[in-house]
Image (cartoon, rainbow, N blue to C red; front, top):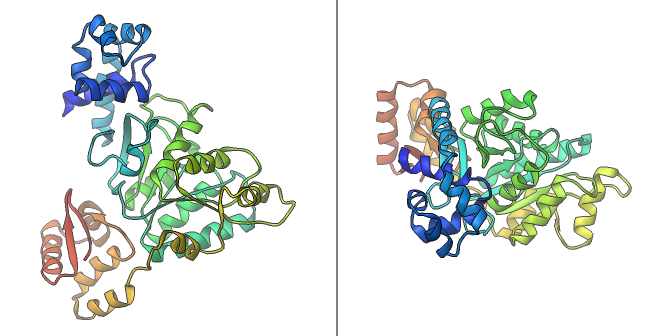
Length: 364
């Protein structure tokens, strides 16, 4: 696995080889290692690269960086997901411009049953913040994962409220995972990871949050979700880019309407007016379009009546979540590993809990 990763990182870090070319080469030759085993003529005869790109692949100078990156990843518990990995976001994978490789810090399942992206201005009004909070609160009833860009404003509001409510949420960033931008969101990012969420990027360490990286980041937000919601935005900016990308990807796009003439409502109102977004007033509007049903919490609560205190403690953490990793349960319940294993087994035998691959658990 480490050898495969070495070649995968080297491939995507090769100058003049972007994600589209990397995927074509990978599929043609069968592995990243096989690509680097080719000579110049073999690469050119494949028809997947031009002469300049082939010449860069032959140099192999990128392996020094790849080796350093693996050391960094191992030290800080970062995973790499190649586009053909089972854990790679399946909603994103089939798009031609999807990243060849993603770097991920976290334990949450990137292929959750329901995923909603929430984006908006970096300068929200009280109106925008209130509606963002209300939307996140209402979405909890639908057992969703929330994704956003960890930026100032609406992004940060969506992440913060998700953490408060125990909703798994993923911050998709435009830089390497050796930093958090903006720096003031470092604590928030740490809480996101700690509470079952995560931070995701296609950029390796030492990548600065340069302006050109943000549109690339936005395509991941748009590609990963089932529905994208714009809370507040002006007529131009990252949120409009994300909405347009989501439309191109055939995603359901929603916008919260605002007062005519308000700067940060103009973008939302225009998305609705030009039929690039459906009008959204509550989370039920998303559920109606996507035909979602609320989680059956009333039935679940009836099942919990006969549970012990420890069993109820575990099931309380599972309520409203698609799945939770074992490490999160150990940390949050305070139970010993052996005791928690016994409680989980008992819940599974009662038909209340299901174990999933990778030490994840969910309500049955």
